Amino acid sequence: MSRQITIDPVTRIEGHSKITIELDDNEQVKDAHFHVTQLRGFEKFCEGRPFSEMPSLMARICGICPVSHLIASAKACDGLLAVRVPPTAIKLRRILNLAQMMQSHALSFFYLSSPDLLLGMDGDPAKRNIFGVLEAYPTLARDGVRLRQIGQQIIELLAGKRIHPAWVVPGGVSDPLTEATRDQIIAMLPDAQAIAERTLVWFKKAMEQYREEIRTFGNFPTLFMGLVNAEGDLEHYHGKLRVVDSRGHILQDGFDPPDYASFIGEKTEAWSYLKSSYYLPLGYPEGIYRVGPLARLNIVDRCGTPLADQEWAEFRELQRGAELSSFHFHYARLIEILYAAERIGELLNADDILDPHVRARAGANNLEGIGVAEAPRGTLIHHYRINEDGLITWANLIIATGHNNLAMNRSVLQVAKRYVDGSKLTEGMLNRVEAVIRTYDPCLSCSTHALGQMPLHIELRSAAGEVLDEVRR
Image 1 (tube, rainbow, N blue to C red):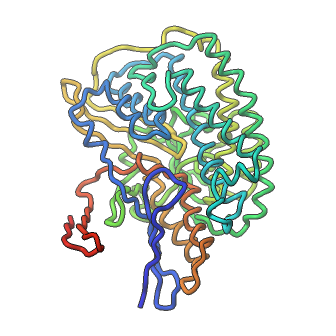
Image 2 (tube, rainbow, N blue to C red; image 1 turned 180 degrees about the vertical axis):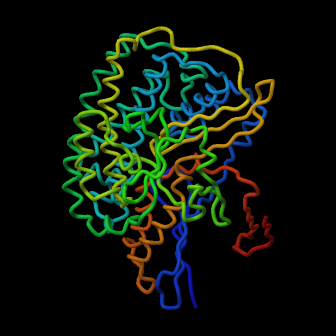
Image 3 (cartoon, rainbow, N blue to C red; image 1 turned 60 degrees about the horizontal axis):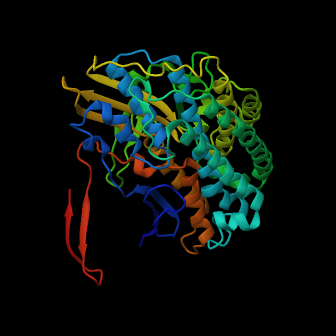
């Protein structure tokens, strides 16, 4: 008789989830699912609110990547205003988003995933955490803490606080950059760059120990999607969305973000509160694609900064065409950290970076606005509709983790089939099933939203665990 293995909760990720693995009569893996067990529904919460409040409200969706929501929301509101955002304000928004990229990638790589990489997938779970890394590899652990600190300090210096800032507003930013703040940020960048460079040196050597994981951690053909600029370079703030296939061939080059509904579909499944996005021309589930740092490095023609371009060239030599293994999300994050340090420096040295004109003001001139930006985990879409009074009547958020949902589920199944033996379970084999989810760095409190009639199952249990009543929708 078949049975089920449940990993609950999935650890070292942001949010609440579990994994179920179905075994057949021979104790071999038959199926597996990644279940997101929390529902927040921000689209409904914001209905009736003035659109001018949306950036500050949306920044509160997540404490890990508030800047990403702040920027995507403000860009949607820019569309409602129909204004030209001052060039200096765009540069300042870019710097803030890159600082967010730096601190979030550092959190994912050093705090959440490095325990597996440094202490081993089969290591003692009591020590396989950031404190165990600090004990065994103090220099690398301190580098991770310092790198995240730099990113957070840049956010605080620009936006006033590290978590849930409100500095980015419809039409620009609320305050210009001062010379003293600029110089303070510039002084931090060499440290960030040095940490990124030495971590890349270590990681590229360490990959030799993880050949099997690289081969099986989400290693399958999919599409990849993300923003590129007009030259096809790495882009996190503005541009067009490019889709490439598993061989790296451009499938859809440069569709405008406001046209996303013509290319991206959304679907719900009864076993998760996380929507699954798919590429509409191929349908569901054949239109599976991935977003985030791995996808961004797969779709671009180059990064656009000297050191990151050199690392990107090495990265793309790993495999002809697109790099398919989700294990290499880790590698891509380190390259993006290096890029962020270089690019922030370039932006801060722009001639107009201290210009006091950083906000365009207007009332609502459009009844619909769409904002798209690249969050650390991938493409983030905010879509709003308002009434004549400027109140939100409808909102749709497509979060990076939702884009990756189909790929995460297929990855869980691939790893479970490779490592899980139902007749003799070990902690290490189950940790690998969790570790493949950590490669995507899912942000689940961001990504659980409504689409039509969401499934709901509530059980009322006694103190002894007996089911007294249940409701299903």
